Image (cartoon, rainbow, N blue to C red; front, side, top):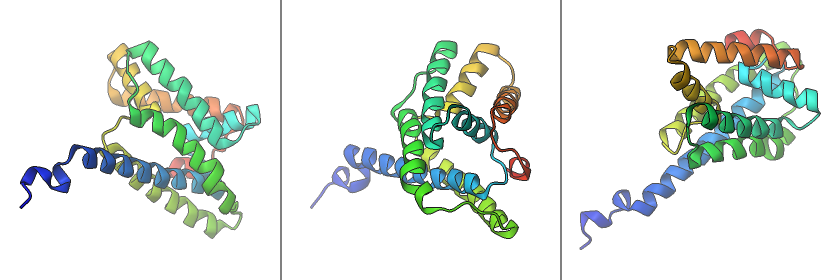
Length: 189
């Protein structure tokens, strides 16, 4: 007879494996949501506007711009607030861009018919929420952008709401000025 300690749920390796599977599935679903928002062509969330602006400005693939921005944000978060990236933070930075550029973008067309765009935008928001909930609850580390938010919160002692709002307005304005897409999807998101 097996003891309780040998059951699947108590096994340290299986817990780690389950956490990583949850993280990767969550990041894939989040990537799908982000890709849908780009392909709906109705505007992006603030960081999406910024990353799309980087992509347009430097003529690099959108997923790669997510990776570059993620790396820079991780470095800034560490320098500003000593927020150390965890394994999930690094996975977030690498995998979202990979999933978007090499798996999702090639199979999703751009949408130009209004009701198609609306369906894609709604699916994008739902997918992004589910993906974020999954990867965050795996507890393997916050995403790069949330790490920066925490670093600025630690450094400034301002309210978390003020830090998050200021940061998102800043990246939205910079991203838009670089060619990122802003539209009614930005407001709804």
